[in-house]
Image 1: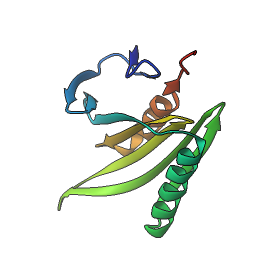
Image 2: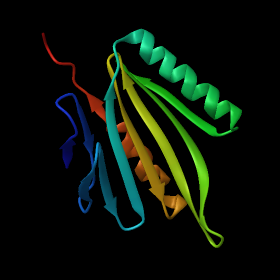
Image 3: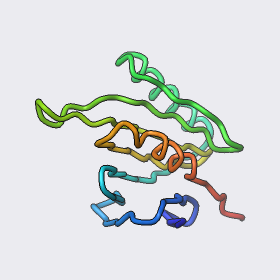
Image 4: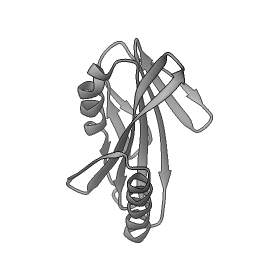
Length: 134
């Protein structure tokens, strides 16, 4: 089901996800998968380039696995990392940014089972931007 995040940003989620608002975030969850989403704006392509450069530099400094792709006007940048929740429990985190010229949808996926990564990537790729006609 397509969920409208803002007038410009939306995401396609499989059936079974619940959601709630937490301040400026929307949290979607189902068994084993939690997705936190926040959308923010900036003033143009220069700020988009600066955001991507900062994300790249941080990911490279932390030696994280990087995923980058472009689909039309949307540039996607994401990183993967294992996060220790407790000494006996880790989860895979995909911190994913879908950027357009004037804004970004930041989606953070927390996966209890790494086999859900393909589903998370598919959901991330479903994030779409529709420019407002002026």
